Every structure is written in C-alpha cells, then in structure tokens.
Amino acid sequence: MRLALLTLTLHWIWILAAHASEPVPWTELALTIEEDRGVSSDGATICRVRVVNHGRGTWQGGDIRFEARAIRDGRVAARAPGRFGLTLGPHETLETVIGFVGRFDRLEVVAGGGTGAGRGGGKSRGGRSRSSGSAAKKKRSPAAGGTGNRTRG
Image (cartoon, rainbow, N blue to C red):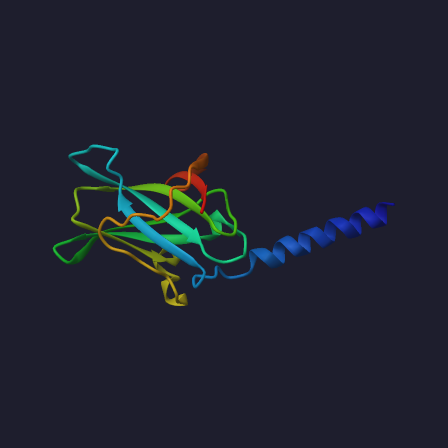
C-alpha cells in the first residue's frame, strides 16, 4: 500500500514538473494593455493588462510574464514587468493591474517580461485597446503587480 501511494505521488510530481517546464505558447496567447479610465490620477497612469488564451491548453498565470511599457514622445519612458495570477484555461481571459508614475500618451505590452520577448509571438497593442466580448468577471485574487481577474470568452 505504501509503495503504491509513493509511486502515485511521484507520478503526480513528475507530471506537474513536466508541465511547469513547458514554454508558454505565445502563438496561442494575446496580450493587450489599456489605461484604466475608472481610476483618476494626476500623477500616475493605472493600466489593465489582459491575456486571452485562444488555444486549448491550460497555463498557470504566474508563468505568463510580460513587460508593460509607457511611451512618451515616441520613446519608452518607463517599463514594468508583470505576471498574472490564477490559472488560464482554454478560451479564458486573465487580467492584472499595473501602474506607472507619470502620465503617458501611449502604452505597449510585450511577452516574456522583456527578457523573453525574443522567444517569439508576443503580441502588443499601443494606445487604448479594448478587449472583445462581454464576458463577466468571475474571480479576483492578488497577483504580482495587481489583481488577477478571470473571464470566459
């Protein structure tokens, strides 16, 4: 009985470790950023960063890293690395909130927290992009740099 339990435990650890080492499939994920108009500030720009899973896989939000960039006069004036909370399932959306000190005229987001952007496929949108769909928010929990929200598309 103990051997069977030990074998089963080791099997699950192996499965979880194998999944954790898989790279994030940026060809299946889409990142967007927009200024949060629900927050008023003279000295800060608060932004919502979203990731949409267009694939069939499920990914830990903490593995989905990005770098948000604030643009002023055509140049990157500030950078903020981030990641999501919760779990991103097929056809779901996660959201987190980040902030920049100062007011900016344009925003960008790239995959991989800046260092991994060269892995390919990271989508970015400048300006004030809007996500499609009218899915309701399901859940909130703390995440790095903000609050994680999940919606189904």
